[in-house]
Amino acid sequence: MIDEKPAKPPQASFLYSLRAVVWSFTGLRRKSDFDTDSARLNPVHVVIAALLAVACLIGILITIVKFVVP
Image (cartoon, rainbow, N blue to C red; front, top):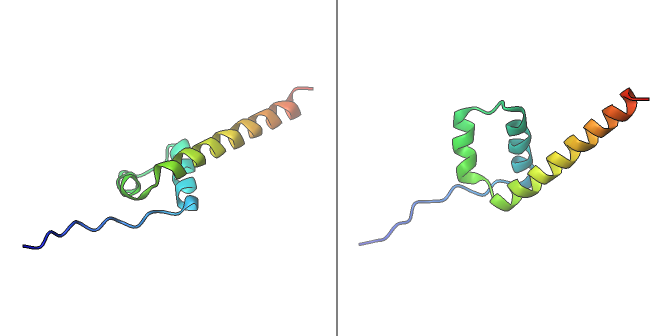
């Protein structure tokens, strides 16, 4: 008997994780993409990408408010 473990899908890169987080922020993710991402994404990359995306979003919102409010 040979114990064969199922092959894990290759880990996604940080840029792939960042792209997945940004698309998730907009709410435009397909179910099939979510299923693929849940198997491939590295949780550490997702957390770092989410923190970067939140920081960028807050920076953009503050910039818009500074331009609009005199």
